[in-house]
Image 1 (cartoon, rainbow, N blue to C red):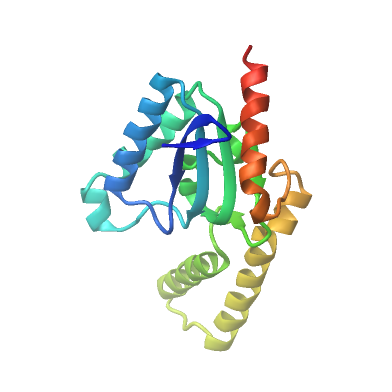
Image 2 (image 1 turned 135 degrees about the vertical axis):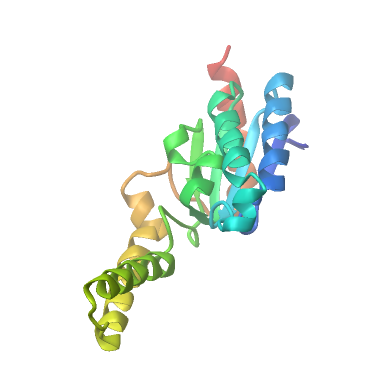
Length: 195
């Protein structure tokens, strides 16, 4: 927890994918903040939830779902910032646009989307390779490389902060140096709105 312009807040941030332990810890933190009436500030820099058999056996789906449910049910002010990456279900767990935070701002370097360009290209590559194998055909490496470059460029262009902010998928782009002032203004606004 912290104090910004004299107001108590809960701060949650990440730097990379969210694992089962992180999701469990975040869920409890959200619930405690909600019970205490403490607004939560979300600092998004995540590629999403961890994937793979090991993480699924560790309860990633269950713990990730609990985190998303906790965000959904919070009654306190929620202020989100896209400060880096914000992809996939991690965007939901960190109170992205679809979860209607009271305020959502982005930094100029941020990237957000369903998945990154490279991940989308690799997924489509696997789909094409498996389809070709089922048909007994060979995959043309040149065609595959061209498709990979095209998909990566397409997704990365639409993930850019200027693209998403220009389509009103946040409440505006801010200078990172102004973040504290913006949070203070948002906290005052939320407090006044709840009178």
